Length: 396
Image 1: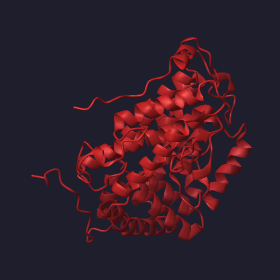
Image 2: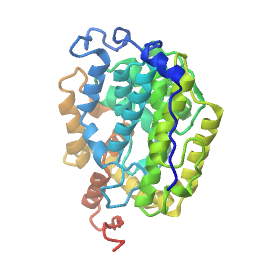
Image 3: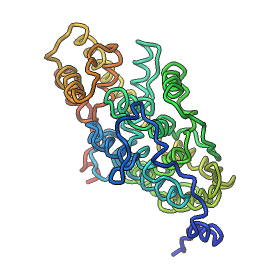
Image 4: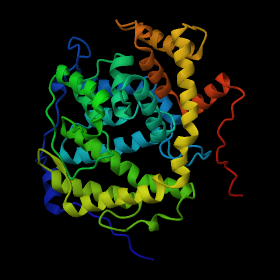
């Protein structure tokens, strides 16, 4: 049996970490909020701990549990859902942040909230919803942008600018070898940046304003790269992780996580940026490319969009009809608008139902879990055919 070798930190960097040589973390007293008179940090509840707890108690946090990560239309409890993904991102990014002397509370807040605006049915659902939204409004839907809307627009949590910026700028589809924080120190600039994401569709190119946010962004890729391979094997799309190149970062999940963490810490310790060396960056890019070839662009995964597209469209049109006709007995009123209004009674803003109908429908659809959307479709269109899932027992 071959011996599996994992990278280790150099003695020099390990000694510096033990001596607390680096301390570039964002401090709790630096947290910027829309209302600075509220949510003042205390010893019991530091600034970014407050953000973590607000996110975890958001009504939509529970819904991570039944949202597709990659593999829709499978009945298999061993396949990752988005709830596990955000925990993995949190764990990996906190490991890196602790070694780099960063604020692990801020890291955890960004990591746990980064996908809270994601649609049902994963990136296929995101793409379909964006197409519909753009057709009606000329705007684009991106899950990272919508995560901010959930935590700062639908629910008014008064989260810190640093947390919201990290969530907005987390999109890990565009990997970089070096992440230099992009300064952002006021909500006016943040709101302008956020609004531009709806019309220019540039959110994938954003860089977080803090080192903590940069760590979460790269950790998002680290968390899914190898884990998606494990899931693909369980879904029988591949026979083993050995189908992938065993390059500098490795071919399987545990080695990928370890080696990238080590390389990032070695190259980022004491610096004002987050980076990895060229060999590891090339390996990361190659690893992502192979994931697309062997997993994301396989016929089974690609056909998800064509299957769910008519479901999204019909639900969207029916919700628009119900809002325009003020059908208060419809699900979008009873399960969404009333829900949001009830929650926001504790805050000043309570006119949610007067917002643009397209925005309300997008909020509703994005908030759904996979199972809720299918149940809603069955309820609204009882004569329509649903989706056939791959059963637990297909392999027997």
